Image 1 (tube, one colour):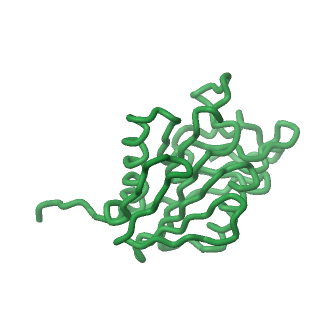
Image 2: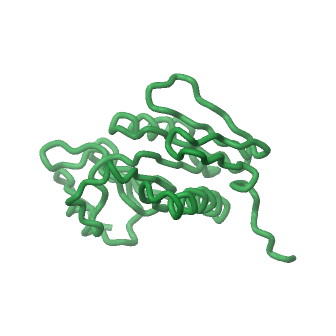
Length: 192
């Protein structure tokens, strides 16, 4: 990976290449560690549920891991950029001039983060704060081992907790959607 010693621009990040798994915190590149299958499976299950909803309601776009959101810039220098494990952007929030080949210039409406065994909860809470400071409406944090989902909402101090046997009413962002957590945390049947 190239070492950049001056303030980072979006073009600098793009020059790192599509295989670079990085975020930017405080203007510095932070390399993201690889994740396991469980992490990826749960993120995908949430994205699938949201994508199925979008197929019917067409109220926005759902993305999986890899889309970089530039949450904070100063004088064309990227200060904070995050890559949620899954995300949703409401149609009304998408800039008409956004070039789909570039990182998203702003915050997702919803960011989903899946905890990996080596994640520090303080780091995840920092991500939640970064998303909210940039305008994200909700952040969902999935804990695979505990089969739980924490729901953070902009402007609310209470964190809602949902377990595998429960459904989460996601109507604030997705009218009529109840997310069944059992489906999110169910592993694939490999027929073995």
